[in-house]
Image 1 (spheres, rainbow, N blue to C red):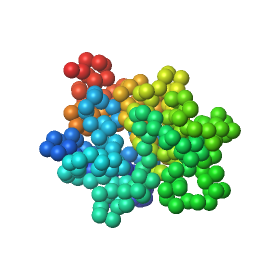
Image 2: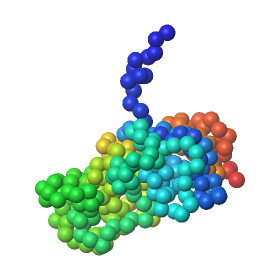
Image 3: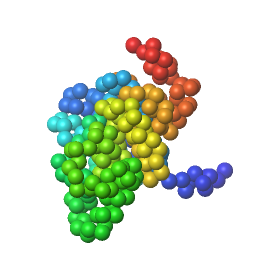
Length: 262
């Protein structure tokens, strides 16, 4: 029987983790992780505290490199088919390709405009019209343009917490990354700001691929297309979100979702 030509022409996942072990010094944090992240989808990583969610997220753009002794000890991480640990990978370019938004909003003590333009400037962009267009586009994507278009030169630190987090999203997408990583982006926000960020994720997925770590299972249901459940550094189950939450295959997943997990 001949191979299915449709399957042959299907694009590879934007992120693929293959048989990966990850350690902090002598302590193994992730065990034999296999995960595929598809284009223009929101993938949520859930699980109890200390299960390896944030560690796995930070493996995708090598943010863990900043931790002494942290390293992949087996397997590989591919972004658009390229092993991100190959010797010829430029970390600055990788982090342009894979942007990140952190748990706590961290705007720079600069103007709103300069916060968004920052990534473009460090990559050598000097054309004001290009910067202006990127700032407007990114703030629009982050649902901030109408709120801030007349205050672009105000200090970003004067914004509310929710606005600061959306500004950090605008800054992360200004360089037009393939993937946007979000590490519990709503955990420090009030319910109204959280709702705005969640609504924003659905819009962002039209332009970018989003991977989010969340401790909030209801949030995973609301925002994600796929969910991965981790426990003790192992990927227990990965499935379409609706399937995982309504008909989990693994007893451990079911126990966690029901709150009977110990």
